[in-house]
Image 1 (cartoon, rainbow, N blue to C red):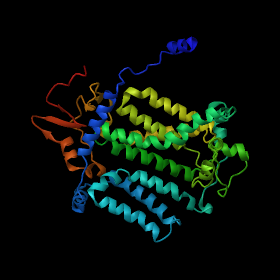
Image 2 (tube, helix red, strand yellow):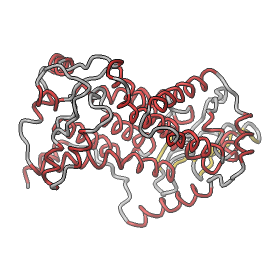
Image 3 (cartoon, helix red, strand yellow):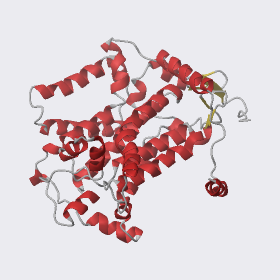
Image 4 (spheres, helix red, strand yellow):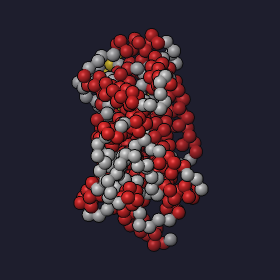
Length: 411
């Protein structure tokens, strides 16, 4: 063990030193955050409140075009769906309309609209006629990988396999990938600033939706196709393959992944990798709002990248493409109040986050509809200008008055 410890000592990895370790320091802030978040729920069941907020919304090109794009994408996907057929599939738009009508439910469903549009677009991909689909690229990704990186990196990762490595790759790829988005949303809701979880729903949904649309217009075969079929031309009638996850089926004596990937709605969707996109998006959000654990967030991304190549589901260029997509969407959808990460600091006392420093008073942020549709008191409290030029900023349960007083010290 001594050589290993000596190696880690020489690496000088900057491990965080301010992470709480005792159960009290871990649970108390979470309980307080959940209690505070629950008090902010809008329990109104009056459709008049929703209609009033909708009537008061100031429509513009910048906040309307994204909505039009979302509903066109979801509407087209709904229209081509044949399973379920009419009239059963009417439940989807009717259920969404009813959820949007009541304030108690639209506070959940409206921020999740990009996610819902992505889900229905992905599910309906199987119903697109093959005659209207573009040609599947089989040799392009391995050729680009060899040119850009000097070798087929994903192929090198599959040269040696072992049941232990199979399980280690399956955990991030097949378990954490599906669980962590909900975990991140929960912590942003309970411990993050107001509006953080709405921002998460918008960024996460748009990233996945744009990724699926890219896969539809630019279909590419995954490494498992090259292993099974070589570089022979692919057809949309071919079933998908679980790749290395077939070994997980063997470990658990099941056929779950074989059946799931064999009936996947989007078989040739290697580029960009949405596994990579989701992991990078999670790391970006957690690093931005909870920066003390950056090494763990990005370490998870590295492990997931290895897992996707080890299981022969993605080339390295797919992972880079998914990461770039996440970075672009993360910053394009970021609200103005969250853009300066220097004004966000971790409170060691466990009281959460607070906004520190001065904001540009001449800069007025245009509220999106998802900001207006939340409880009116939250927005009014966050934007209220009172006193002698002092601006009250709401950040969780902490309030810092700025503008007329000197900038508070972070010491």
